[in-house]
Image 1 (cartoon, helix red, strand yellow):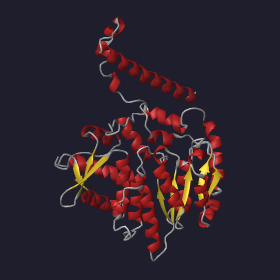
Image 2 (tube, one colour):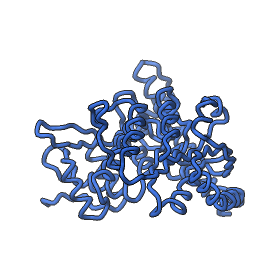
Image 3 (cartoon, helix red, strand yellow):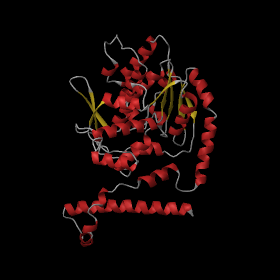
Image 4 (cartoon, helix red, strand yellow):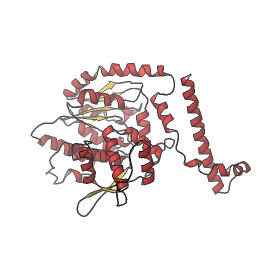
Length: 383
């Protein structure tokens, strides 16, 4: 009975959504002079319907398997338990200098996260690159990795890591920097969706191949597209010591879908601007870690309390996050900043005195309403 109720709610929500889309199309026809008598009679009731957010909560429940028959998740749970038991073997492969490519049906984002928590967290240096993010900037992500590892500057080029704009050169900078360290460091890089849109370019693939050949770097990545094998050069995969591992999870691709571009989910990005809605903010919120959420909340509160049009100095934000134990270093906070920039939440500029200034690319009233919905105090300090 509960399943029927959930399905009925979902059907109603879906019908309401497409009715709103139909209303939006009729509004466009009215503007162009193409209107029927029936549409004229409904004018007063249709004025604001096109601006409503889609039923994100129901859609997320559907993607996560919370709606429908619970038995459908049994295969996924059984597969995940079987794969969990293989983690020690994967660690052995990595320690022997191999890199891993996981393939098979179902999302592997949760699988890699479980591997990170059980085998790496608190024991080995590791770094996560979310390949399913459409706006991922690989060069920027590798720059954050270099900062996190405190790598020395590359004197051969006479340039700092921050001035490098090529992902391949950034990978080479990491290789040279790791080789110069007095204390060797092994780093495990996790890349869910290595075949994601942002990583399919030739330049980014070359950077991945270079990373795979660094002795101190150990890659464990997943691929999702059925034709992903055609994306990679077999010869370079061999040079990178890649091993293909079957890892069917039967898990929903909810993480990848919510992170992508979708009109029905309220995520509509343009080339030069991202217009956020409550729906898109919900999707971003769902993709953040607990530390990322805390850092975003502090930034949002500071922007709303700012007397300079929502601008926040990076070091003010850093001190606040440090005091609240959200981060322990500048590098970790800049990692969160890169993630916010990839989601088009934040833009940055540098003043003449060298101060980094952050500006939230979100309407302040929208941000205030969104934070209140999550039970977060957004009152100004002056009030």
